[in-house]
Length: 77
Image (cartoon, rainbow, N blue to C red; front, side, top):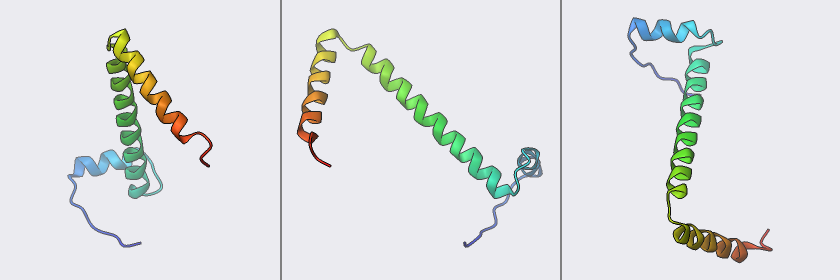
């Protein structure tokens, strides 16, 4: 794998070191994975909140649309 050098402050380097990963790359990958998961769930929660604030009629129309799409894909696999 190709490697690159990035400039970090001493403080940031020490923060990376404090997490105790086998390598800085392992620590950065773990941090990125956690950040991606955090953002995914934040977006999922925001979508759920948006949906729960829809009127009952709009929720029913949305559910009907989802069901129609599901039926279109039934048996495909």
